[in-house]
Image (tube, rainbow over all chains, first blue to last red; front, side, top):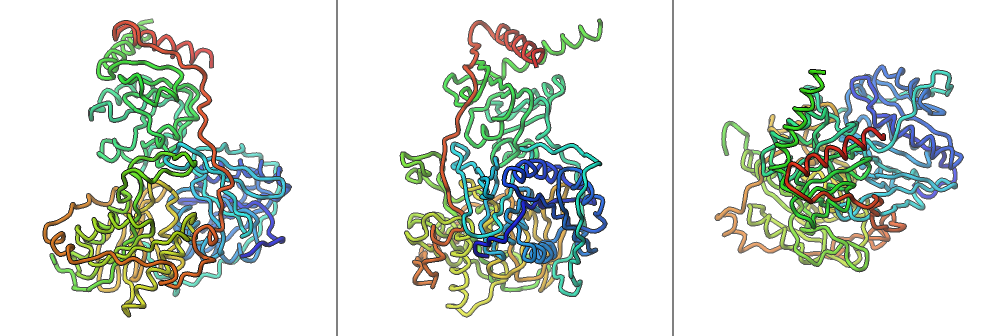
Length: 335
Length: 274
């Protein structure tokens, strides 16, 4: 798709799972409302699924000017071929200027596929998003392990596409007085062309540390014993974040991994235990309000990203911290 | 060959990228690739899936990469682990490729190899993402370019019959188990397997194998689709990440008990102020 003066509107792909929109969808819609106003564009939500009209309605209540609603029983579960086919058709016909999706498994799956079919540019894994007044998308992506930010543009091809990391932007609260037009689109899918079949869907209750209010985080400095970290998390009513090596070693599932290949967090307070501060990691904690770091190496890079720097041995400090917090709790109970 | 797997003799391809071991910026503001390098960790898992599939049903594994001449190092490592053939697309005109141009180049290379050898492709494996780019887009973009089906975020692969695989893929909220016909492209997560090391037999036979290197003219990739010229996205500027935290408050005085109580006082004051 070459430069197309007719390309109009900022579109947001509303990803849903089991008839409920993912949080990332509303985060993207919230941010894109601001961008659409800046560029003088309409904000358009693309909702796909089966029996998801309530999501289209919610998209209007959360800021969309219009919704393209594509419903079909073949869209009940995400499958690359069906979703790409249906999305391609509606995009080709309606020519968005920008198309924004979540950097989730399904968002990334469809984004790459669509970008090639549409012969357009895709800025992947965006952590900060802006637009010029004449509608050129400016996506910032962390480069080189998070030590730099590159601002990426797609000057000619349309739509300008981006996938955005979850947990970065804020959703707009529901306002039921908001009005918007919902266009119902026929997906034009036929079961006989479907090659991939869903055998089974397994649901897993994971944790979402991107919304943590307090975070205790551990790295290699813990020496492989994470029991004190878990106990501190409980005492402080905090969520647990870890660096990538701890997930690689199987000490925690991936949804606890903080950083540019994990989750971006923005808690009130983050306490780092035994984390040296690789750019991959610090890229994920930068938005914390207050950062306290404990490390026995006075030259650890993590201190550059911290408000409080505690130079000491985590294996001595953590047990004592646990003891003090327990004593404090006991005192509160007695009072 | 174990259990009752059919002998399928699959034609398996794996895309591989060589990445710097330490991510740092050079004086020119671009990634410093002069230091030690390694096979991208996710690619090692993709290669392991390919080797494991060949162990079960037989076939041939071809590894392909794009990069500077020293990327041969990672391809040789793949040969020592048991890959049968290795190809490197290396050309200065590929510099500055975004994900679209990277996929275009690798898809053109794969098509060229298939045509030269009068073959068809059964399974293309790629790593979920690279540690220097993190985009996780290239496998899907190659698949789209080759008009093949794709499953990304794959954690396990079973052989169902002579026409289908069963794959388990990670999604937000759980897993999908999908029945997928050949040919297909699978992007593999780090949790899929534990990659094997080089084997003695594979290393011995790797001695006779050479990485075949092509430039873009040799595979028929037009210059206008290569590198910066073929990339729809451009880097408009690069900025260093600015650390905008105020001066740090340092606790390094006294014994552990004093450190802990100073720290707790600081946390409590901070939380009360917020």
